[in-house]
Image (cartoon, rainbow, N blue to C red):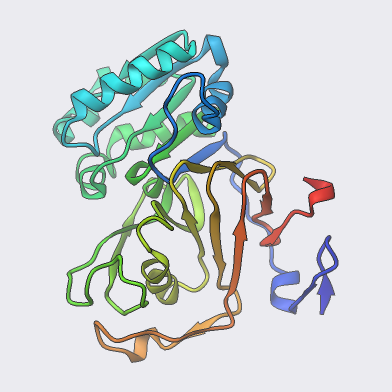
Length: 296
């Protein structure tokens, strides 16, 4: 056994785990329903704007997940404009062909911040996953610009994305973790080795996250409350922003009976680590430990 920076004893596999970190710009998954009122204490959107360049920011909003994309795009255009951004454009993708055309790529090429709105996760997958737009988002983030996503837009930022299951295991908002509760599809891959879920406390999604986590125990499960975000930077640390909490489940040493169960059966998960972090707290993604307050 060895000790982490805060003195907590770690098992050998965790203490000696190799570090693999992508060099890229900041990524900000948001749990949905972020505070959009000007003059309020809406820390999440203010931090996004700051990282995008403040008054010099050129923001591209991608409202593809929404079925009222025009309305959502206009709303964010107004919000970021009133917050002081230099320019705010809306990238409308109504069919996959749009996401492979030069106008979309040119717009993203000029951005200093990219913001993906909420809505239906399946729309993001069907219209954007695997397109030139997705590759451009990856490239711009690798060049250092911030990419944020709220609700469905948060989930697609990682390499693994939760989508609604077949329904054979019941509704994904129920408390119990059951096999088949959700499906997993490929996301944009800006964040490696983690699963992100949103509206977490408000919609009772612990069972849903545990179901996905049980099938993929090496991943880090992250549940984001509404009006709550995590900023993840090049230093490999996650910082909690907003008014709610972030739930983190680490499965490096965990086991489950996922592959012994049938769809709809309740799962057993053993030896996972649960962390609950409030606003302002930081978490080291390399060691998978909270950063002590005196080092935050």
